[in-house]
Image (cartoon, rainbow, N blue to C red; front, side, top):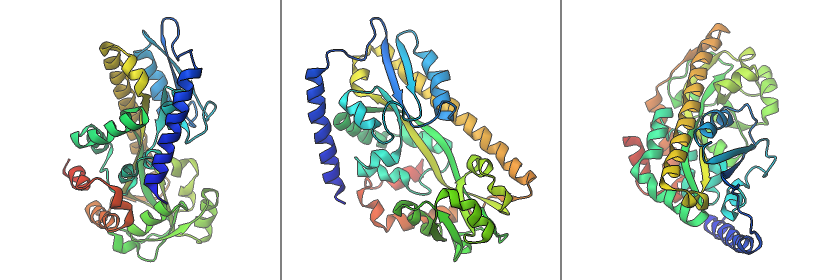
Length: 333
C-alpha cells in the first residue's frame, strides 16, 4: 500500500468536505454561554480512560465548557473520529497510534515493541522536544491537537509451559498466540517465538488443548478471561506499553482564550495522570492475584528482549517511515 497516497487522499477528502461544511453549517458547536465539547469513543462508560475524562477533565473545565461524552461508538463509528474532528463535526476523541499511523506513517513507531520502557517513560516521550514536529504536523494537516498521552497498560507473556523464560532465545519454537495482523505477527517473531494467529475467543481453548503454548495480553485481560485457569506462568516482558491520545479540535482550541487553553491542557494532563495511576495500581494488585492462583510471576532479562526486538524492527520495512534517529532519542530518555 502506498501510505503517502492514502494520506493525501484522506487529507484532500477532509479538506473538500470541510469546505462544504463551512458553507452549509451556520451553527457552531457552542452553546450560548458555554463551549460544547462532544467526545466520541468506542469505549464504555466504565472504561478507565472515559472515567478519567468524566471525573477529572469535565469538572475542571465546567466553568466555560460543557463536556458531552458519547460511548460505544454511538456518535461516530470507531476509526472515523479523527476525520470527524478534521471536518469540524466533533471536538474530542480518544485516538491511538495505530489510527494516526494510517494517516501519518511515522506514527507507526509508537506501535513497535519495546519503544516505551514503562508508563513514566511513555509520558516523557510525549513531552519531549523531538515530538513537537510530529504534533505540529497533525495540527497543521489534520486540525487535531494531541493534548495528552493515556496509559493503557503493559502486555505480558502468559504461558502454559513451566519452562523459565529469561531471553528471546528461550522462546524459540514456542507457539505464541498473537492477533492476526501483520504488525502483531511481526512482534511475535521479534520476541523470538513462533506466532500463531488465532481469534481471541479461541485462545482459552487453545491454551487448554495445547494448540498454543501461550498468549500475550495486559494483566486485567488475563484475569477477566480467566486464562490463569489454563496457564502456569506470567513472564513480565512488558513488550508493549500501550497508549492512547486525547485528541482535541485545533479549530476549537484556537477559539479559546489563553486562560481557557491553559485550563483545558491542565485538565487533560490531570485526567491522563489519574487514569495512569489507577491502571498501574491495578496491574500491581493483579501480580499478587496471579501468584495467589498458583502461577509463577517473574521478570526476565528485559534489556536482552529490548535489544533483540528493536533490532528486528530497525532492520524491517516497519521502520522505513520512522523519523531518523528517533529510536535513539527515545532510548536516551
